Image (cartoon, rainbow, N blue to C red; front, side, top):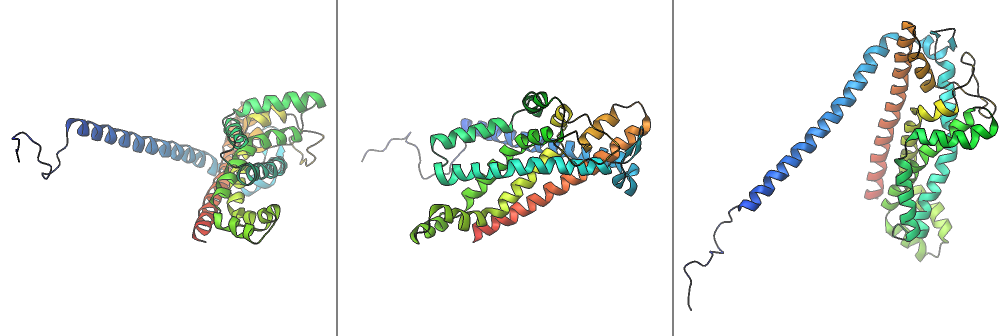
Length: 302
């Protein structure tokens, strides 16, 4: 058999070619850029939290959280804290059922790969990226102008639109984690589809759905633009719970109006209110992440 002197030695060690070395350099550069971007993002978050804590903790007191606003740069955020809870809770009562039902339709009825499922997913993603100021303007034209006044209900509807895509997408991801064996077992036993969803699938995904809902509520609680456009006229020194007849004091509006004041003490109170809001949002987010991790481990492990 004829052998050629310039034939490659296929049994020899592999050596990196110029193309492979170039790819390795590009890969390291991209990896370094991703790590640097993550570090910058975490550093920016740490700076924001540190700034709010340093300016707000010193002005925070028990009376500030429990008393109502009085005069100019006086009192506390008791009514604003209650108002924020009422407005956000009303929005959640609208958004969470619609979001969960939308996720059930995509995952259990139409299927994620169907045309309607893909259209809904695209629509939810577009809603999730929609600027909240546009949502506020839309509700202003739809509700505020028709009623002739600003109300807490208008702000709740606007916040519900903000919460809806977050709740729906989170619920959809959790429902897709439910093992297919549970659905197959229900079908094998002859269980009706709706009973399988209500009695098997939803209980298995309940923890993850609750987690997504908490994250959506935490996101909406800090929104200012919809509240500013739809719920900025109210009596600041009273506690108001009827969201259908008039505006409701909220913490985002309190911070906005305080920072717009020329009184130095108002700026200090705005920092304290921001600190309270930050604590609430961080606690909700951390609790939701822990709950989601536990629920995901339970679904995948069980």
